[in-house]
Length: 382
Image (tube, rainbow, N blue to C red):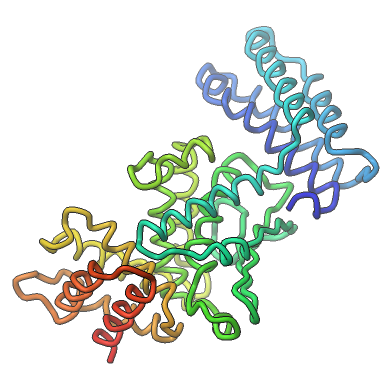
């Protein structure tokens, strides 16, 4: 949580978070009327003041008092006469936003985390996996900060996530790392996707057995490729207002902008240019996941709701007792046969998907889902 971070980091995150939200709502107006330089100057003042606090931190000053100083620094900007009206409106909205925070302080990262956790629980419920209340209580959140890039791939947003599983119990700590001096608006909009990746892909990975669950690191093929694809689908369903999860979108806010920001970060995960093995593993996992979904779209049994079938299979495999190496092997065995396959000349893996779907529909609990998923995995990868 932000309260555990150094004061200068708290101030940087909350100050930029609040002020950029107001400033971003006026960016199109200023840039569209040829006054982009004014918008740049206003946002530049926010970053300038944030940088000064980092260089000479005043740890005795509260976040609330810091916001007043930050607001004063922006308020002294002398706008050109042609933008006096809109700049006056912006400054008025900034004062209202700061006053609102001072009246009811809130940790914006923790708020998004709790929403993402609820989304994840609902995703798994829709996929016929019920997460026990004890496991939900065992998921905690921790915000962190860094001064260098949190990941190797050339991401457009400097934002990192990490889930740490407890080796003795079914607990997990979800961490989110930000670069305070690079916390622009697009980075803020990518937070829900990063949180959903950690929660959907990692937080509830199986087996749900203390002492066994954390023995192996997450596999890049399945967790970082296949399940990241699922997490991205879940994010888009939320932000697009989909029937399944769309009710959560307004709790994150800025849904259409979140879609754009998440897409750029998601695509960057699969861009070449980093150590080739990690890139290739993620890309193959995503490719296989998309081929499985495409197959469900064409099968008569699943084409009415192919995404639900894909989510059910993914959730069952991810939470089952299937070993990480077996998840990797499954990706490698499923992908090639499904490439441009014809249902009239379907390879054995298509029949295995059909059998899995028929059997999984008859299940009534988690164990049924896991048994059918493990049987499917053994059929594909004996």
